[in-house]
Image (cartoon, rainbow, N blue to C red; front, top):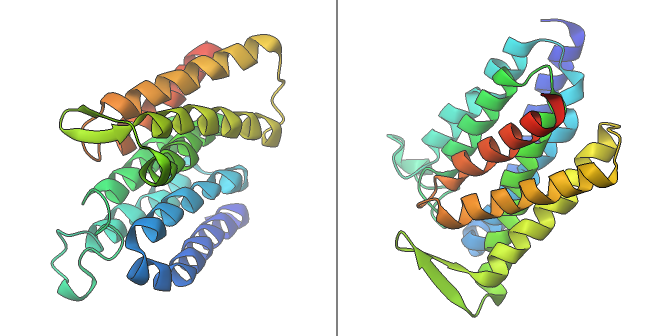
Length: 221
């Protein structure tokens, strides 16, 4: 492992550990809000991606271990003392799917780190804020596949996905033109639709994959 990769792994683990520690009381007292804040803030690992220089290290040492970690904190863990610790307020395997998405994106799009960031931001800020704001302010609901969602939540998904896509392009020094703005709007809309129609919890797989793949096809092919 070269120095940059080691630094990247340490920073990812340290950041997630700090998040878990700072949201511990919130998870216990306000599990819905706590879990969503954790879901959103983990997305900031997208800002650490440029540190990594080795595909396998990013995918299997920085991202991959969180698949096991989040599973052990899910309702299906064999360890009773931590069962459902971060998922009792949401879909049981949601954070596991989150980790799976990051791992696959990290491996497939390692040479296009901005593509990984687009998927992560759609999943974290977009989907996370959609759920948080939708559950608080969404009065008008709709049901798809027996999964209740709100119109305000879906609008929030579109708006914040689009905003964070702009942030990603600025951070990765990607040229922003009017054409790119239109493409980002279409990708944000596609991410919103994916979140709307995907069954329980699986949007943590569908949203990042659709956002990243659409961005890659539009920008690099």
